[in-house]
Image 1 (tube, chains in turn yellow, red):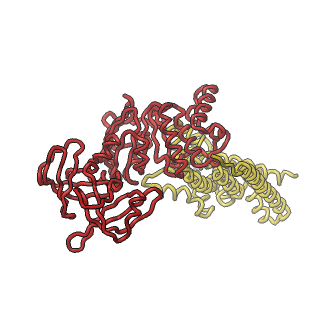
Image 2 (cartoon, chains in turn blue, yellow; image 1 turned 90 degrees about the vertical axis):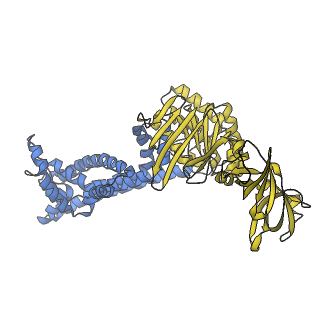
Image 3 (tube, chains in turn cyan, green; image 1 turned 180 degrees about the vertical axis):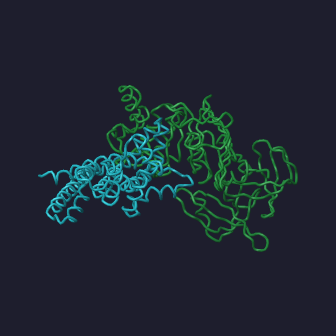
Length: 233
Length: 359
């Protein structure tokens, strides 16, 4: 396959991978914290975390551009180290992280809230520190929800367009992810290129769905075997 | 030895308690919402009190004066939650081993095997909690709490979700546990019979305070006040005035019944003639009498509820201006068969079964 198709694919895959890893930990940390947070600012913080989901992506992109731009606070800070992120590959990751974070946060927070506080308390009375309580009890029990959250935010970052375009632009071989490349291919009247890129996205998405379904099916299967009623007392 | 003296305020609720136990089973008895579970949470370190102290075997768990508040991890407290709170994603063995994971592997295996054996769940080691019945889950929860050899065992309504048969068997097992586990046990319950059976001492809670903490015999025979009497099953309570005191015998006039009863005192009271008191008697000590003798009331049978081995009977005495004064009795079947609804009869309330409360 010629470079013109492979390049957006590689950029997208790298971006999605980096984004998913970052969003995964950021989202979980925020969700875990907010799930048990009982402070005054709960609604406010919650609103800020979810904001990128309700705002138009271009608005978020514009905000990021101001923030990371030459005159923005983060831009000036980065200038001290002679770096800039605007219109570079990291910008695609930043845009995708900001846009996919609300999904990861909201969905996994719901999963953490479903974990019964008594079960975590039981672990504490058995001597487990907070770190162990989280990784040995809370996380495994919330895992189905966290996994769903991860898939959602992965899909969101693969499809990210608006904010990415604003912050990272369309530099072929550098920041042009698949959705951005499709848009500019159509703009340029290159329908063949657009179709091939669309086909690539379809293949990735369908394989992801198939993998999920297969994995869920296996899980369901093993559960139904374990769940066979066995009761004697 | 456990000493607890703590206060904690929440909107609309105030916990203010003070008690101590020494190597025994204490039942914490009271209606729901009276602060029983919160007490256990404070002892386990899951909730921080506002002020006071908690001391366990010379170790200070909490002290507001010296700002000590040990985390639950540091307290060596075994907690059995009301819904057992087993780890659903771990097997029974893994559940029990959770609190002793830092020990050597062979030691963990030995301890788990020993506890499985002790709690009669030997064959369930590989199962997951959802594959267990309620009673089995309870046994596993106990084994898990006991594994790290806690200095105190806190049981939050451990039998409330079990059916009667399983419950009775588990009660017996818990009692025999005392040979195996030497330490304090605190048992929260709202069931008096259960508390009496299991514990040596009972603390009666009412809206965040302990209104009596004594040996179980004492709580039953001489309740500290009206509320304790009611909570511990003294269903018949009457206001009265002391007429005469002769050693252990007191004549109490009950205005609503227009009658004087003889009450035999248990324990020491400082009573004066004409003092206002409350006298009460449990329904199981109310008996039928053929003819009016001392301490009998003339009553009318209002309703009878047939039980398996006895019958709950409700009587009333006709008072002035058509008022009715109720007496509840638990009669043997043979006695209950002799009366029928609406019939007039005599009830005998024996002097030695009365409870007297100084107002």
